[in-house]
Length: 591
Image (cartoon, rainbow, N blue to C red; front, side):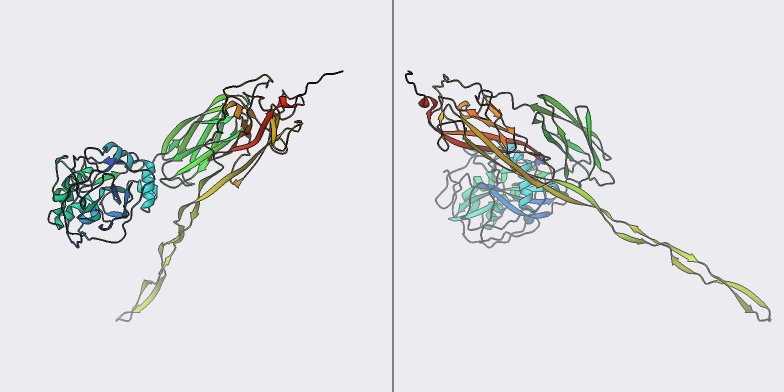
């Protein structure tokens, strides 16, 4: 790989360097972006001073959106596996250094995280590994990425994006400097260069003072930091790096106090019990100001009232209904009402389909398929268990005594003898104060959450038809039929339907084209009575041309509906084909 040219600097450092002010930078998706980048070409390295272009990453810290103060520790993300780092400087952020923290070397174990969603290229070489600022902005504002960052830094996603916090991003690299492996952010590289009297820039200038610090800088002033207006293609000074470069900020806007509705189109089978669900978000809703959702389905209104949930959270809301007996598209109109928002409306297109419209044709003894080849059974996106939750509200009393002091008068007449012997009288109020207060409940609503779940088990067995005279165990000749039995059960805590459908697909049709909708009987789901069977059996005939070997049928067990979606399962079972039905024919002369 290409390496960066450097000279040699001291291996062990114990440096203490004070800092100045620094800028920040941001991006948007679930966030608002303030990030730009620049950079240029690199040069060759030496055996003791080099950098591999894949050895980059980013340090992330949660900071207060008003003051810029840290509200979390820092974590380093990288696609690399830098397990050989010998020197690093802890997990200080740029805010730490600009606040007066010293550059203090550490030889302890360096920690990092390889994100589930790989990072885009953060630090490029200007030639072969080029960064894309739009990819960087998109990555750090992707909801799933932000959720992962929140979890890694001990925050809930809703708290992180409520407008009170921002993400501080700092590009970092892993280099071999004077034969020693280092982990460095742009700010730490500038401080290390100062501490080594310029040795770092002498050996890593295109990286340490250009491509690394210019990997991220602010487009707009933020948190007291000034946006970068200098060159984006030239080396920067240590001072400029410390004060302006090597940092980006992602901001989040406080959600509006407005109810919103999330819907999705769906597909159901005919004549089936189903659940249709929506998600309601926005504001805090207690029994004092609940939300109401109305589902309008085929001239019927299903009203769900008294929906409650905490601020900056959401609530799944559902209705159970029965689909029509014929295929069609049903439009479901949904409206949401609450006292802190206008009525919100949504629409769901429910496609109602039939599985009983394409059974296999009559098998003929003369059928042929000379180009047939066996394919593997399909794998659908199925789920045999689901969970969902529902908020509830309860009152927590806080009884407070409200004082109401009242003066209770008690006028007492006193007699006084004057100097001349006459008497006079005067009144004294010997009353007292009484508290005529009362207890007032100044409590508040608290939220709890109930979690529900449902899971299903299913099993499939195919066996040679009992009318097959030459069956041996689970081996038959092609042209004969077999029976199927599917058993299934559902358990859980919460609303759900039973399993309502099972449909079998066959290898001779490539698991497409034709299928059989099973019928529920006392023992489980079976083939419907076959109109081409002499005995009207519940059987499926294998084609006479099917080759010897394993014959695998595939069944999709479905339509176990919950408020969180549909439970379904993929099942397969096999028999063996050996020979064909013609082997059992005998032609002889009659007398």
